[in-house]
Amino acid sequence: MDDPDSSLREFFARQRDEDRAAAPGWRNSLLRANRAPRTPVFAWRWVPAAACAVLLGFWVKEQHAPPPTPLSALSELLPAADSNPPLFTDIPAPVLPITAWQSPTDFLLPTHLDIHIL
Image 1 (cartoon, helix red, strand yellow):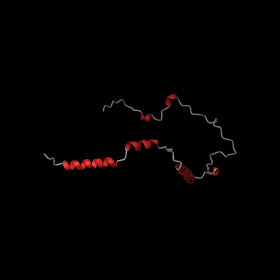
Image 2 (cartoon, one colour):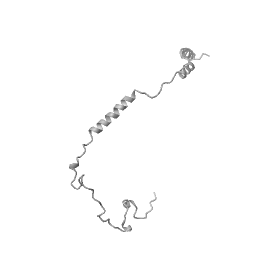
Image 3 (tube, one colour):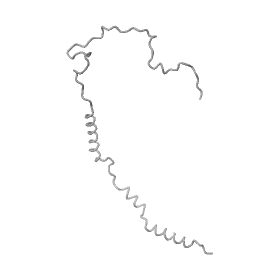
Image 4 (cartoon, rainbow, N blue to C red):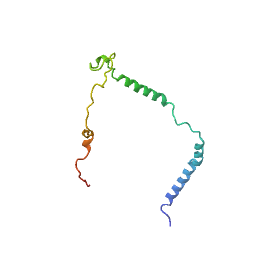
């Protein structure tokens, strides 16, 4: 009995043989690739670009910085530079009992004892 696909099978067999003949030897190319010397990964060409970027960042920051406020523009409540600084020993410290202290985060604590079951 003749196989109706025999001509197609022969065609693909010939095509496979031609592909095998034209294919490069993978084993030799892999061995040659492993013997090639490796170059360093670090690229020195990016160093000047990075330095320029850092300098540009500092320049932009300096351009947008507010000018310093002169001492003469400050409030009159501040002591003059030539006078002696005031001593705070004259001011009595407030005396509060320890029970009057309240933590600043006291409002976060729960004020009731409920059990919440999900």
